[in-house]
Length: 101
Image (cartoon, rainbow, N blue to C red):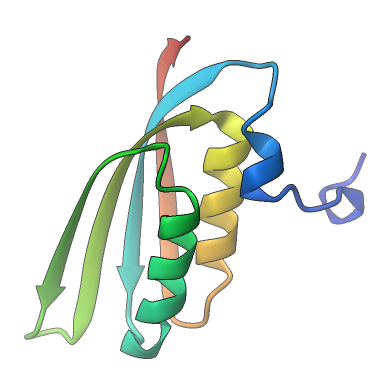
């Protein structure tokens, strides 16, 4: 199946994934502060999985750096990262642990 053919999995649907929980860190760099509300909305939607969050406004470079520690099914993590990464002026990287529960 091609990635383009795959239907987007909503965060609410993906929590029932049979593959188990993964621990990951999502790194977000927002170069456009107008997307902050949408980022917060997406993070709120996944709030039950978020272990911790740190936001750093780097005023000298006019960017915001956000890190999210999350324990969720892999589909939830990748869906969240994909939705945030599609926002204009936002870059996202995800690092997964090898721990699966």
